[in-house]
Length: 480
Image 1 (cartoon, helix red, strand yellow):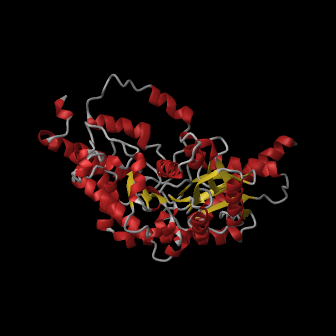
Image 2: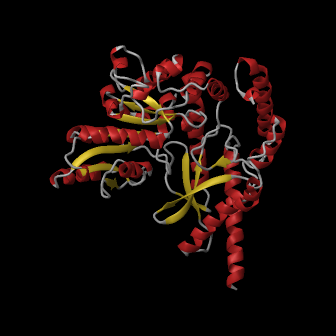
Image 3: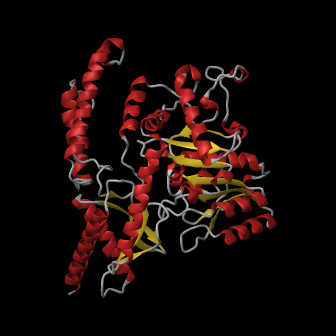
């Protein structure tokens, strides 16, 4: 079995095996005509269940053949221009190359003696990002597994900085359309059930700062402790960006930690046209960025950035076998001192490879393309009598609802939209997401693929309308 260990003796075996796998994936990417095959859970489950994991096939080619049947054939392919659903981006080749390198070398980014150059590369990228944000010379941060972990750590730091006598008195303020991880983080941090105060949004789905000011004042009057305000730069449903300068003013006035969840909107940091939409982010105490959303990186690649490096001490623990305190005096850079994780992949390498091959402007050009595509999609929806579109896009998300002619029952319209989404997914012709607005079912395009065109959007809108009309026709038949 030693022949399967990756080392100097098996380098040629490694080269052949990985090349064979890459060729299979490349062939699949080149011939994929739809983002999904439409396979069902009932179809796929028996095939997976039939695999006896205690009887290995022993041959790479045989395993890849099996994988073709169990995964590659029916995978949801984000690179396809008609995948329009969630915040999943097609990935750039330099980052995929980085993924191959980091997996083979297998560095762990917790301590210097496990990563050496990897540690310094991650730190360089953190500095690059904090400079792009404008957090100042005392800023720092660490790569994380994703936006939820980044938000959790940010609120941990805010909780410790608040120094409240009782956790039950702490309050976190965020918009009603912010990410669910804010509430989840509050629970994980031991805050009370009423800890998260949701602030209403305006017509553009941006946090109402007048309402925020009112809630901050009321909390103080009630003897509560405002712990943090979580502003969002790119909400999951609408891509909306909260008014960051006004929120920063209120946070300064009330002495509250300001966190900006820019997991989606962080692509604007490289934008050549729309960087000004993030004005005010430089005043944040902490910022979440997800490079695996709008920097076109493979999952996972995220980071938490902070204005003051000293606040990261709230996540620091020392173990004699790993990062003893003496290493701090010896100036040995251990990233575990800043992280909620111990063992951690060298995910920073993917972004490093991307910047060294494409440059920041290259990323920005791609993100600007999808933002401009969203504007085209908005115009299509706004002029199409079959659809109601909720809000003009700030980034690259469109939320809309099919409105059939002559149907006035909102529940029936809900059912038609739900059916259309499911039928479209089952067909495999396109993949779209769904959400609720005002208690009603809506559909959602999340545009992150520069290869998607306005013609693709128009074609998918026709497919949705066709499926919805089919449902309504069958519904009338049943009623009669």
